[in-house]
Length: 162
Image (cartoon, rainbow, N blue to C red; front, side):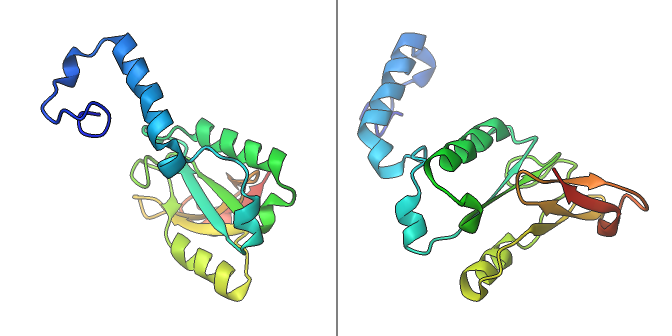
């Protein structure tokens, strides 16, 4: 805020009023959305170029709440047909921002993306592990991993369903 919007590195942002903050937010969108904005749901050019997008969001993420990611996914679905052909979203219950928390976080999402891009193997699930050592597979949205029976620390005790 100080450097890019106000151009005053020493500015004390604790003195901003709500109105000033709102105005600066709007300014940031005007100046930087075309460069770093992430809200454009039209991924048709990305799809045509052969792009693949693999996203996961922790349902306990304090920085990027999962609702925003789900809303974005729904917007992409409204603008582009056959979204699962190039874009997979995985929900990680109990996981914080990128990792942490008590839930099972993906363990090899980059490997899954490489398999999809280089071998054409789209991930239906992502292997995940929790801090307590338990494992499970996370299902591609709209599926979620649900406990069905057996040892709750073992991946085979879960199924991905809607």
